[in-house]
Length: 195
Length: 69
Image (cartoon, rainbow over all chains, first blue to last red):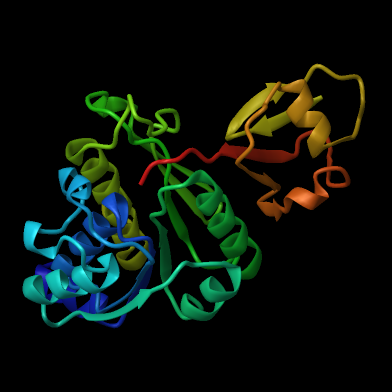
């Protein structure tokens, strides 16, 4: 498929991205670059200088809300993408309301309890909507430990072992690798298998 | 009991022909707090771990959610 055709197919698609940190900002940018037509993004947080080691933001955006800044950055990359941004802490009710029409949902939260919450909500409320989830990305190296596993409509990307902590921080290369693998699965779900 | 656990065949150390999710977690010594459990592709909410039953040849997924994003 040539890129014109790919763009044409993606133009009508909607992807929900829950969380605009390391996974969400990088995955959303990848999806915007290839022309996914509609992105619904949500995050409650503001950008801090410590986020810039992995998140798709810039120094002059420190202090801004991540969801709003990500919308700004996406419009600079691909103005054809419609971005619906929400500065909000997601809960099951909001997830159901905001992501109801999505073709695919991307879980990009930081905390494990939030990951558990969204996976439980999507699997029980939208069992036919694919959910792509990032699990295990801290530290560096270990390229070949990062994998994708499918459990029905739930796709888990990551090494499934390395939790972030003070001594095992999330860093751009590995977070970006997982985020882009998540975006790559989203494309596979939207366009059909290629490889 | 033979089941498919996380996409792999596995023989559980039990003589029972039916166990619940709590029992599975105990047999497997899964002590994680943040879990997603599916039986035959159906999501099992936490409050049902005591009643959701697993039978031989069931496909069971137990996915540990860890922080980082």
